[in-house]
Length: 353
Image (cartoon, rainbow, N blue to C red; front, side):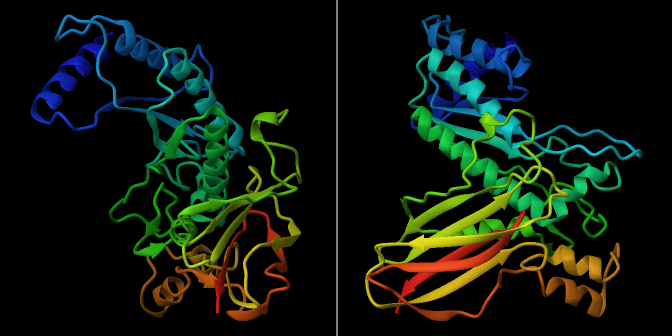
Protein backbone atom coordinates (compact mmCIF):
# COMPACT_ATOMS: atom_id res chain seq x y z
CA UNK A 1 0.00 0.00 0.00
CA UNK A 2 2.48 2.62 -1.23
CA UNK A 3 -0.15 5.37 -0.97
CA UNK A 4 -0.26 4.98 2.81
CA UNK A 5 3.52 5.43 2.95
CA UNK A 6 3.17 8.62 0.94
CA UNK A 7 0.36 9.86 3.13
CA UNK A 8 2.31 9.23 6.36
CA UNK A 9 5.34 11.17 5.12
CA UNK A 10 3.19 13.98 3.72
CA UNK A 11 1.20 14.25 6.95
CA UNK A 12 4.40 14.37 9.03
CA UNK A 13 5.98 17.08 6.84
CA UNK A 14 2.85 19.24 6.56
CA UNK A 15 2.07 19.22 10.26
CA UNK A 16 5.68 19.76 11.25
CA UNK A 17 5.61 22.99 9.26
CA UNK A 18 1.94 23.90 9.85
CA UNK A 19 0.54 22.10 12.91
CA UNK A 20 -2.96 23.55 12.42
CA UNK A 21 -3.22 22.76 8.72
CA UNK A 22 -5.94 20.32 7.73
CA UNK A 23 -4.95 17.30 5.67
CA UNK A 24 -7.19 14.53 4.41
CA UNK A 25 -7.90 12.07 1.65
CA UNK A 26 -7.72 9.75 -0.18
CA UNK A 27 -10.00 10.98 -3.05
CA UNK A 28 -10.82 7.49 -4.31
CA UNK A 29 -13.10 6.79 -7.26
CA UNK A 30 -15.07 3.70 -8.37
CA UNK A 31 -16.81 3.07 -5.08
CA UNK A 32 -20.31 1.87 -5.92
CA UNK A 33 -19.83 -1.58 -4.39
CA UNK A 34 -17.58 -2.71 -1.49
CA UNK A 35 -15.58 -4.91 -3.90
CA UNK A 36 -14.85 -2.04 -6.32
CA UNK A 37 -11.23 -0.86 -6.33
CA UNK A 38 -11.95 2.58 -4.90
CA UNK A 39 -13.93 1.15 -1.98
CA UNK A 40 -11.20 -1.39 -1.28
CA UNK A 41 -8.60 1.39 -1.27
CA UNK A 42 -10.70 3.51 1.11
CA UNK A 43 -11.03 0.55 3.47
CA UNK A 44 -7.28 -0.06 3.44
CA UNK A 45 -6.51 3.64 3.88
CA UNK A 46 -8.83 4.14 6.85
CA UNK A 47 -7.66 0.90 8.44
CA UNK A 48 -4.08 2.15 8.21
CA UNK A 49 -4.91 5.59 9.60
CA UNK A 50 -6.82 4.06 12.51
CA UNK A 51 -4.91 0.86 13.25
CA UNK A 52 -1.75 0.65 11.17
CA UNK A 53 1.87 1.35 12.05
CA UNK A 54 2.87 4.87 11.01
CA UNK A 55 5.79 4.70 8.56
CA UNK A 56 7.36 7.85 10.04
CA UNK A 57 6.77 7.57 13.78
CA UNK A 58 6.51 3.83 14.18
CA UNK A 59 3.45 4.40 16.37
CA UNK A 60 -0.13 3.31 15.80
CA UNK A 61 -2.23 5.40 13.42
CA UNK A 62 -1.90 8.55 11.33
CA UNK A 63 -3.62 11.89 11.73
CA UNK A 64 -6.59 12.39 9.41
CA UNK A 65 -8.49 15.69 9.45
CA UNK A 66 -11.15 15.16 6.76
CA UNK A 67 -12.25 12.61 4.16
CA UNK A 68 -12.49 12.84 0.38
CA UNK A 69 -13.89 10.64 -2.35
CA UNK A 70 -15.26 11.06 -5.87
CA UNK A 71 -18.74 10.29 -7.19
CA UNK A 72 -19.72 10.15 -10.86
CA UNK A 73 -23.15 9.58 -12.35
CA UNK A 74 -21.86 7.70 -15.39
CA UNK A 75 -18.83 6.79 -17.47
CA UNK A 76 -18.35 7.75 -21.11
CA UNK A 77 -15.89 6.82 -23.83
CA UNK A 78 -15.21 8.02 -27.37
CA UNK A 79 -17.68 6.70 -29.92
CA UNK A 80 -19.00 7.89 -33.27
CA UNK A 81 -21.98 5.52 -33.07
CA UNK A 82 -24.55 7.09 -30.77
CA UNK A 83 -26.00 4.73 -28.18
CA UNK A 84 -28.09 6.53 -25.58
CA UNK A 85 -26.39 6.41 -22.17
CA UNK A 86 -27.85 8.25 -19.19
CA UNK A 87 -26.22 9.54 -16.02
CA UNK A 88 -27.71 8.04 -12.86
CA UNK A 89 -28.53 9.87 -9.64
CA UNK A 90 -28.97 6.44 -8.03
CA UNK A 91 -25.41 5.47 -8.86
CA UNK A 92 -24.15 8.86 -7.65
CA UNK A 93 -25.76 8.38 -4.23
CA UNK A 94 -24.91 4.68 -3.94
CA UNK A 95 -21.21 5.46 -4.30
CA UNK A 96 -21.34 7.65 -1.21
CA UNK A 97 -23.45 5.12 0.71
CA UNK A 98 -20.78 2.46 0.16
CA UNK A 99 -18.06 4.78 1.46
CA UNK A 100 -20.15 5.88 4.44
CA UNK A 101 -20.41 2.26 5.57
CA UNK A 102 -16.62 1.95 5.42
CA UNK A 103 -16.13 5.28 7.22
CA UNK A 104 -18.38 4.17 10.05
CA UNK A 105 -16.57 0.84 10.25
CA UNK A 106 -13.46 2.73 11.41
CA UNK A 107 -15.21 5.41 13.46
CA UNK A 108 -14.50 8.43 11.23
CA UNK A 109 -18.11 9.53 10.73
CA UNK A 110 -17.56 12.76 12.69
CA UNK A 111 -15.05 14.06 10.16
CA UNK A 112 -16.06 16.49 7.43
CA UNK A 113 -16.33 14.67 4.09
CA UNK A 114 -15.74 16.39 0.75
CA UNK A 115 -16.88 14.84 -2.53
CA UNK A 116 -13.86 16.30 -4.29
CA UNK A 117 -15.31 15.41 -7.69
CA UNK A 118 -19.11 15.25 -7.73
CA UNK A 119 -20.35 15.16 -11.31
CA UNK A 120 -22.86 13.48 -13.63
CA UNK A 121 -20.05 11.95 -15.68
CA UNK A 122 -16.43 10.85 -15.60
CA UNK A 123 -14.81 12.37 -18.71
CA UNK A 124 -14.20 16.09 -18.32
CA UNK A 125 -12.40 16.72 -21.61
CA UNK A 126 -14.84 14.78 -23.79
CA UNK A 127 -17.57 16.66 -25.59
CA UNK A 128 -20.48 16.24 -27.96
CA UNK A 129 -18.12 15.51 -30.88
CA UNK A 130 -16.56 12.66 -28.92
CA UNK A 131 -19.78 11.18 -27.54
CA UNK A 132 -23.11 12.80 -28.36
CA UNK A 133 -24.52 11.88 -24.94
CA UNK A 134 -22.26 14.54 -23.43
CA UNK A 135 -24.33 17.29 -25.02
CA UNK A 136 -26.40 17.21 -21.81
CA UNK A 137 -23.67 19.34 -20.23
CA UNK A 138 -24.76 22.22 -22.44
CA UNK A 139 -28.40 22.12 -21.42
CA UNK A 140 -30.64 22.64 -18.42
CA UNK A 141 -30.25 18.90 -17.72
CA UNK A 142 -26.79 19.46 -16.23
CA UNK A 143 -28.35 21.91 -13.77
CA UNK A 144 -31.26 19.69 -12.71
CA UNK A 145 -28.97 16.67 -12.36
CA UNK A 146 -26.61 18.61 -10.08
CA UNK A 147 -29.54 19.88 -8.02
CA UNK A 148 -31.00 16.38 -7.60
CA UNK A 149 -27.75 14.55 -6.93
CA UNK A 150 -26.60 17.16 -4.40
CA UNK A 151 -29.97 17.30 -2.63
CA UNK A 152 -30.13 13.51 -2.35
CA UNK A 153 -26.55 13.47 -1.08
CA UNK A 154 -27.46 15.96 1.66
CA UNK A 155 -30.48 13.82 2.52
CA UNK A 156 -28.23 10.77 2.79
CA UNK A 157 -25.74 12.67 4.94
CA UNK A 158 -28.51 13.79 7.27
CA UNK A 159 -29.81 10.24 7.67
CA UNK A 160 -26.30 8.97 8.36
CA UNK A 161 -25.39 11.80 10.74
CA UNK A 162 -22.47 13.00 8.61
CA UNK A 163 -21.25 16.27 7.11
CA UNK A 164 -20.85 15.63 3.36
CA UNK A 165 -20.14 18.45 0.92
CA UNK A 166 -20.21 17.94 -2.87
CA UNK A 167 -17.78 19.84 -5.08
CA UNK A 168 -18.35 20.20 -8.83
CA UNK A 169 -15.20 19.44 -10.80
CA UNK A 170 -15.34 21.64 -13.90
CA UNK A 171 -12.67 23.21 -16.11
CA UNK A 172 -11.95 25.74 -18.83
CA UNK A 173 -10.72 24.57 -22.23
CA UNK A 174 -9.07 27.12 -24.50
CA UNK A 175 -10.09 27.52 -28.15
CA UNK A 176 -12.92 25.00 -28.05
CA UNK A 177 -16.01 25.36 -30.20
CA UNK A 178 -19.04 27.05 -28.71
CA UNK A 179 -21.01 24.60 -26.56
CA UNK A 180 -18.38 21.95 -27.22
CA UNK A 181 -19.91 19.92 -24.42
CA UNK A 182 -16.84 19.55 -22.23
CA UNK A 183 -17.38 19.71 -18.47
CA UNK A 184 -17.37 23.49 -18.19
CA UNK A 185 -19.68 26.08 -16.65
CA UNK A 186 -19.15 28.51 -19.52
CA UNK A 187 -18.21 28.38 -23.20
CA UNK A 188 -16.43 31.20 -25.04
CA UNK A 189 -17.37 33.52 -22.18
CA UNK A 190 -21.05 32.48 -22.30
CA UNK A 191 -22.38 31.06 -19.04
CA UNK A 192 -24.31 27.79 -19.20
CA UNK A 193 -27.46 26.85 -17.31
CA UNK A 194 -25.35 24.96 -14.75
CA UNK A 195 -23.57 28.22 -13.89
CA UNK A 196 -26.94 29.82 -13.21
CA UNK A 197 -27.83 27.01 -10.81
CA UNK A 198 -24.95 28.08 -8.59
CA UNK A 199 -26.14 31.67 -8.85
CA UNK A 200 -29.47 30.45 -7.46
CA UNK A 201 -27.69 28.59 -4.67
CA UNK A 202 -25.96 31.86 -3.79
CA UNK A 203 -29.33 33.53 -3.22
CA UNK A 204 -30.43 30.98 -0.61
CA UNK A 205 -30.42 31.92 3.06
CA UNK A 206 -28.15 30.53 5.75
CA UNK A 207 -30.93 28.92 7.82
CA UNK A 208 -32.49 25.81 6.33
CA UNK A 209 -36.19 25.40 7.02
CA UNK A 210 -38.55 22.50 6.40
CA UNK A 211 -39.68 21.68 2.88
CA UNK A 212 -41.97 18.73 2.14
CA UNK A 213 -42.77 17.54 -1.38
CA UNK A 214 -45.28 14.92 -2.47
CA UNK A 215 -42.91 14.13 -5.35
CA UNK A 216 -39.75 13.66 -3.26
CA UNK A 217 -38.27 10.42 -4.62
CA UNK A 218 -35.47 8.38 -3.07
CA UNK A 219 -33.16 7.27 -5.91
CA UNK A 220 -31.85 4.41 -3.77
CA UNK A 221 -35.35 2.91 -3.94
CA UNK A 222 -35.43 2.86 -7.76
CA UNK A 223 -35.82 -0.70 -9.07
CA UNK A 224 -33.85 0.12 -12.18
CA UNK A 225 -30.92 2.40 -12.78
CA UNK A 226 -32.69 5.63 -13.70
CA UNK A 227 -36.20 5.53 -12.28
CA UNK A 228 -39.47 4.92 -14.11
CA UNK A 229 -40.41 6.77 -17.33
CA UNK A 230 -42.45 9.83 -16.48
CA UNK A 231 -41.70 9.56 -12.76
CA UNK A 232 -39.94 12.84 -12.12
CA UNK A 233 -38.48 13.99 -8.84
CA UNK A 234 -39.70 17.40 -7.68
CA UNK A 235 -37.90 18.51 -4.56
CA UNK A 236 -35.53 21.18 -3.29
CA UNK A 237 -34.52 23.40 -0.41
CA UNK A 238 -36.22 26.09 1.65
CA UNK A 239 -34.23 28.66 3.60
CA UNK A 240 -34.68 31.86 5.57
CA UNK A 241 -32.59 34.94 6.24
CA UNK A 242 -32.36 37.04 9.42
CA UNK A 243 -34.54 39.73 7.81
CA UNK A 244 -37.47 37.30 7.70
CA UNK A 245 -37.30 36.65 3.96
CA UNK A 246 -37.86 33.12 2.64
CA UNK A 247 -36.23 31.38 -0.32
CA UNK A 248 -37.54 28.21 -1.98
CA UNK A 249 -35.56 26.37 -4.66
CA UNK A 250 -37.46 23.62 -6.49
CA UNK A 251 -36.10 21.34 -9.20
CA UNK A 252 -37.79 18.83 -11.48
CA UNK A 253 -35.43 16.06 -12.55
CA UNK A 254 -35.51 12.78 -14.40
CA UNK A 255 -32.33 10.94 -15.42
CA UNK A 256 -33.59 10.64 -19.00
CA UNK A 257 -32.56 13.82 -20.78
CA UNK A 258 -35.30 13.22 -23.37
CA UNK A 259 -38.04 13.19 -20.74
CA UNK A 260 -40.27 16.17 -21.52
CA UNK A 261 -43.29 16.76 -19.30
CA UNK A 262 -44.78 19.67 -17.43
CA UNK A 263 -46.14 19.51 -13.90
CA UNK A 264 -48.53 21.72 -11.97
CA UNK A 265 -46.89 22.84 -8.72
CA UNK A 266 -48.90 24.03 -5.73
CA UNK A 267 -46.56 25.69 -3.25
CA UNK A 268 -47.72 26.58 0.26
CA UNK A 269 -45.41 28.84 2.28
CA UNK A 270 -46.40 29.37 5.88
CA UNK A 271 -45.35 31.47 8.89
CA UNK A 272 -44.01 34.38 6.90
CA UNK A 273 -45.64 37.14 8.92
CA UNK A 274 -47.10 40.43 7.72
CA UNK A 275 -49.80 41.21 5.20
CA UNK A 276 -47.83 41.71 1.98
CA UNK A 277 -44.58 40.53 0.45
CA UNK A 278 -42.53 40.95 -2.73
CA UNK A 279 -42.39 37.85 -4.96
CA UNK A 280 -39.40 37.21 -7.23
CA UNK A 281 -39.43 34.06 -9.36
CA UNK A 282 -36.28 32.97 -11.22
CA UNK A 283 -36.38 30.03 -13.63
CA UNK A 284 -33.89 27.77 -15.39
CA UNK A 285 -35.35 25.57 -18.12
CA UNK A 286 -35.20 25.17 -21.90
CA UNK A 287 -36.44 28.76 -22.37
CA UNK A 288 -35.10 30.73 -19.40
CA UNK A 289 -31.59 31.42 -18.05
CA UNK A 290 -30.29 29.17 -20.79
CA UNK A 291 -27.99 30.53 -23.48
CA UNK A 292 -27.83 27.11 -25.13
CA UNK A 293 -31.40 27.53 -26.38
CA UNK A 294 -30.47 30.82 -28.02
CA UNK A 295 -27.33 29.25 -29.52
CA UNK A 296 -29.55 26.61 -31.14
CA UNK A 297 -31.86 29.34 -32.47
CA UNK A 298 -28.81 31.07 -33.93
CA UNK A 299 -27.92 27.96 -35.94
CA UNK A 300 -25.37 26.37 -33.57
CA UNK A 301 -22.37 28.42 -34.74
CA UNK A 302 -19.00 27.02 -33.62
CA UNK A 303 -17.50 30.50 -33.28
CA UNK A 304 -20.28 33.10 -33.02
CA UNK A 305 -19.28 36.73 -33.45
CA UNK A 306 -20.80 40.17 -33.60
CA UNK A 307 -24.57 40.41 -33.21
CA UNK A 308 -24.87 36.64 -33.19
CA UNK A 309 -22.58 36.33 -30.16
CA UNK A 310 -24.31 39.21 -28.39
CA UNK A 311 -27.70 37.57 -28.87
CA UNK A 312 -26.45 34.36 -27.25
CA UNK A 313 -24.57 36.15 -24.49
CA UNK A 314 -27.67 38.20 -23.63
CA UNK A 315 -29.42 34.99 -22.49
CA UNK A 316 -26.70 33.61 -20.23
CA UNK A 317 -27.79 35.25 -16.96
CA UNK A 318 -30.58 34.59 -14.50
CA UNK A 319 -34.02 35.38 -15.90
CA UNK A 320 -37.41 35.91 -14.31
CA UNK A 321 -40.32 33.79 -15.42
CA UNK A 322 -42.72 36.59 -14.41
CA UNK A 323 -42.38 40.24 -13.37
CA UNK A 324 -41.58 40.92 -9.73
CA UNK A 325 -44.88 41.53 -7.98
CA UNK A 326 -46.50 42.23 -4.65
CA UNK A 327 -48.55 39.42 -3.13
CA UNK A 328 -51.05 39.34 -0.30
CA UNK A 329 -50.33 37.10 2.68
CA UNK A 330 -53.34 35.42 4.27
CA UNK A 331 -52.51 35.04 7.96
CA UNK A 332 -48.81 35.12 7.15
CA UNK A 333 -49.02 32.49 4.41
CA UNK A 334 -48.71 32.44 0.62
CA UNK A 335 -50.09 29.93 -1.85
CA UNK A 336 -48.45 29.89 -5.29
CA UNK A 337 -49.32 27.91 -8.40
CA UNK A 338 -47.08 27.49 -11.45
CA UNK A 339 -45.91 24.94 -13.99
CA UNK A 340 -42.48 23.31 -13.76
CA UNK A 341 -41.13 21.33 -16.73
CA UNK A 342 -38.84 18.33 -16.47
CA UNK A 343 -35.27 19.56 -15.89
CA UNK A 344 -36.62 22.92 -14.81
CA UNK A 345 -35.55 24.79 -11.67
CA UNK A 346 -37.40 27.60 -9.91
CA UNK A 347 -36.16 29.89 -7.16
CA UNK A 348 -38.93 31.77 -5.36
CA UNK A 349 -37.92 34.68 -3.15
CA UNK A 350 -40.43 36.05 -0.64
CA UNK A 351 -39.23 39.38 0.74
CA UNK A 352 -41.21 41.40 3.23
CA UNK A 353 -42.29 44.82 1.97
